[in-house]
Image (cartoon, rainbow over the protein chains, first blue to last red):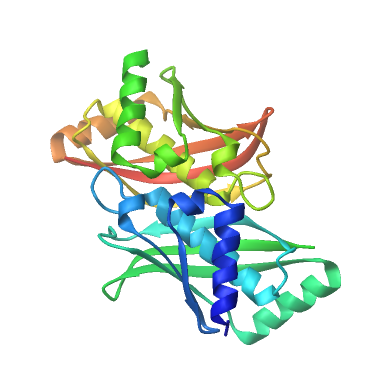
Length: 148
Length: 148
């Protein structure tokens, strides 16, 4: 669980340090300790068909993964990078982009944090879905690496 | 092979119809009939580490795939969508993002165009690399679908 202040700080960090996230108008909506939710409006992220651009969908999902790693580590100085990703675009997104990154199981998160603390480097595989009207539009699977 | 005019039209189409590509300052550099090259400056696309943001890298690669399908079909009214992608981030990109989409073999492209003409729907798998100083930084594999 994260406080409103932590969410606002994370959003400000994105906007200041990753400038394209400002143009994408990305918002950190909430994190209840289970699901981190990011959003971005269609107006800034549509494609030639009036639906969400695949590149924006991948970028919002990637950022949701970064966000979850940062919020879990509580260490903004940690260098978080993405190593690989697989995305399945199942249906078009017609409105706001809403990306949900699910926290892995407690044992996995504990092992990730312990390894980061001990070795200064740890990997975490994260699942992100982009959903609209109760349906999964995009499935994203990413491997993230945190480095001290 | 595409004329300078076709490249400028494709770039203008991206900027007009997919607005985030303006913010990313994406340029269509060239297409010699074998390699379509797109670029985007680091300044508009950097991350918190001062290297290229993974989301921008995925977006530029996705757009390179769209561009190749459009230039090959020569039909701007074709609806091109991405169905799936896999990205491997092998090394950070420290300067300009330079994405290279390679045209598949002639037989594959011919079959793709014939199926699009006959059935109004066809799929093409495309490889895109992002390279810097002669080294592959990002490998992208995407499945694109064109619909009449």
